[in-house]
Length: 225
Image 1 (cartoon, rainbow, N blue to C red):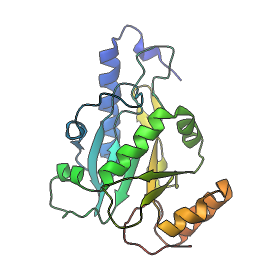
Image 2 (cartoon, rainbow, N blue to C red; image 1 turned 120 degrees about the vertical axis):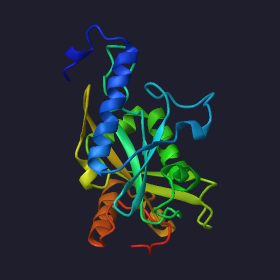
Image 3 (cartoon, rainbow, N blue to C red; image 1 turned 90 degrees about the vertical axis):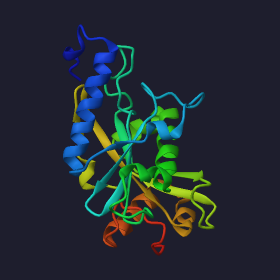
Image 4 (tube, helix red, strand yellow; image 1 turned 60 degrees about the vertical axis):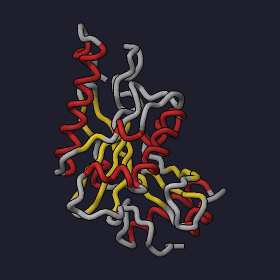
């Protein structure tokens, strides 16, 4: 990666450049305004290490609502570490966020999209090896308990990395960053994946694409397995 641009810059300058170029790239990709959701989560006194700090954005893409991590790709303060942080940002896109399309973007903080995106992004911040695998094009599945999603399913499963238009890398000041979709799974789909490894993940991703769902997330769709 070419890091000649950082010579003579303070860390604050490097961080500002990364944030500005990331926000511009996301706005251009989604053709949407952005709203910062960081402060709505409150201060973090403990948790996984993000390059500069945990943050999230709200956006829309056509008729869908989106919450995106905003900081996994920040530069590390140490100059011998990657200028693109963990090399990715994650997002969830849904047609059924539970709010109207004319609601302010900040309202997405009160939907199920926010806690799920936060849970996934915190997990990735705590396990950089998972980030490497996603950047290299692997499909991963994760499983959580999220109290905000009260539909009787208990554990929540998500498939990460289904190829989408947004899979094209974002160009930031420090280099290219991958934008990785989070796709929520039904209880049956989560059960199908348990213990079966990468072939099952690819099979399910293929079913989602064939059904026209792709990377989109919905709490109310039928199971595909």
